[in-house]
Length: 373
Image (cartoon, rainbow, N blue to C red):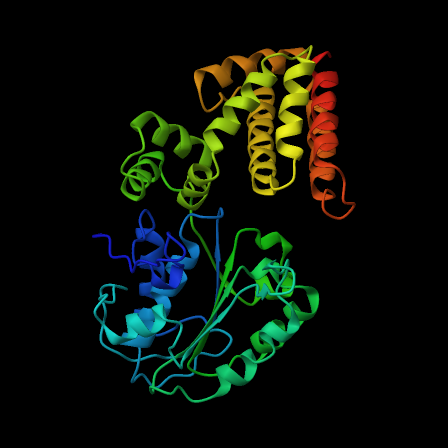
């Protein structure tokens, strides 16, 4: 596929509704296209997979297709779909020059509703969840006749961010789906959704991208990046181009090197290095760096536990040697106990307003204890 991206000057990386550069998901596209051409298109789809691999981009790609090419079919796509007689269509592609493409990109298509977490002007950041007021209008929107005599499409990104009231409101729509309307739910963690929502959607799981695909896309977005750094970021991102781009922007490689350097001092931590790192991540204005470091730490610990349980290697030769050494130092049960403790601590950081510097020290002391067997 040739890359066709509408540049977003404020965001750098285009929002999924503006992006036609979807790679590595040909099979998922085929599933959607075949369902459409079969004449029995499910009224709701759950697009699942790791974060940052293109699920939302695929959702908007399918939305554009339905809005641009799916009109004119007389259909009732109820709970199990309906008959949709039409000419066979061989691609989901909609030209970047198509007026529908541009209206979707601008968020100005009358037959498309996008649901996302809203920005809290008072706090200066995005809300932590999608609330019932954000989804309340979905039912009436989907029940209206399409403004352009085609489909009504709703994209929810990400569905697991709905609180319970919002999820129940969406469930009511799924229980009595309107004709000629489709709901596309993007989810990084479908297990957090209500089982009744999952059961009323057709599930389409997207796989992580190949390392070569992520490396190539990184080089395109950042032509100045070295080949070695692009490969390292792609491995750290574990098949997510979105994560790889975030890591590049957030100094993820340097943070990863700091992490490994400190871990290599186990089972007897270098206290001076630990306090220097904790001080850097705990200072005011280092929120993003702390979160990136926490994600890298959990990613490493997950790989290390896999090396204990089934002999998997790390993302580099240096990490592989470290993981093998630590795997031999303690039992799987001990490392799993540390995993649970660290996850619990990180999950409660904001809730209990814990000092990040002390959090880092506590985490590494727990790792030291496990490494000592």
